[in-house]
Amino acid sequence: MDTTSPLPNIPKKEDIDDAGRFFRYMAEFVGFTESDANAIRESGLIVEKHLPAIIGNFYTNLLQYPPTRKFFQKKDGSIDDDYLKLRMYHQANFWRRTAGGVYDDDYAHFVDYVGRAHTSRGADPRLYIAERYVIGMVGFVQHAIIDALIRELHEYDDELEERAIKAWNKLCMVILEMLARAYLHEREVEPQQALQEVDSHAVMHMSIESYEKGLGLQRIRGVKQVFVGQEGDIPEGERKIIEVDGVSIGVFHHKGGWYALRNSCLHRGGPVATGSLIGDNLVCPWHGYTYDVTQGGLLIDPTAKLEMYPVNIQEGAIYLKFPEVEVDPPHTHQENNEVVYISKPVLKENEFFVKDVPPGRVKLVHIDGKRVAVFNVDGVFYATSEECTHAGGPLSEGELDGKNIVCPWHYSCFDVTNGTATCRPAVNPLKVYKVVVDGGIGRVS
Image (cartoon, rainbow, N blue to C red; front, side, top):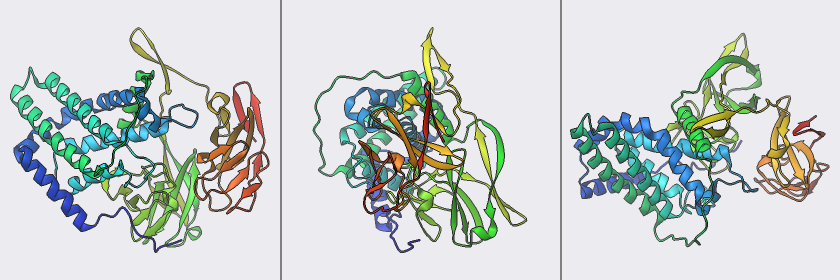
């Protein structure tokens, strides 16, 4: 394990000081004072109450416009629901923290980092978001917050209503300046395109689900104890990656303690538990996002955390507690202005819906806890082991070109019809599985 790589997401002191100075300068310029911060704290619960609806409406709006819709589309043009919910989670976290009313240097650096993350100088330079959309986001949320304050306070506390509206308007001006300065001279021109249809009820459901997840309000059906291994299997300073109900988890033996974290970076779902561990800092190998391995918190924003699972040792055996979460059916339609949820058949871990894997697409399933990638090549299904034989890259996230899958990590290639490595750096073949289609359900064996 390489322990010499830098920590790209640990902020330098001079960067924090600069962000703090700029925030204070702009706050003074627009007249944002401590009394304004108090007004935001007093109205914070009102804002939080409306955040799921605000975020849901915001992303419904984004999905209508092709230039912003493209950021949430899979290669086949469908919406990537998991990524959409991840962005909702981050967006809600940003405004929930803002509504908390604490505007110190840590908050200023957090906003500055969010601004840079949307530019070509962010952790993932391929994910450039034009400045106009960042400005539009603040304006959209600002208007929605003001509308919520008016509806909630106008008849009950018009004095707080007035103070809170003024405070939020001033603060949003400061936030806009903080975000805009990250762009320097970057500009992007785009064509005008027709609006797209969006199922606003499904988007709203995802917004509520992701918001509740951020608050830890998931409905837990029960907790099961999962055997990880013997203490000797994970020496001090080492880790083990396991899977529970399709969830990848990294179990760390670190400085005499035991920690279990979900192996999915909050940025783009990278295998964070496989990254370098330097002191208490765990660095995601994809884009360098850095976490405290003992608490799961993202260093740049400790309020954003990886899911963690309690670990206990019983007579030399390692166990972790894994929650079983109740999940609402994701598909909806509207009847008489009410959202009706449509249940789908329950799949086993080695099954998939054929319609979810159109030609040219890849699907991840599991067999006895092992990750398997299913490929649709011109209407015929093939399946191989999901991990690249070079460095374990996730082939289910790679690009399928004809019958060849390209690993997203180091660009190794494999023929999915027989598992053969077709280009380096990989040389060893993939394990091949059989796929059987029964009606609308595919099954890997």
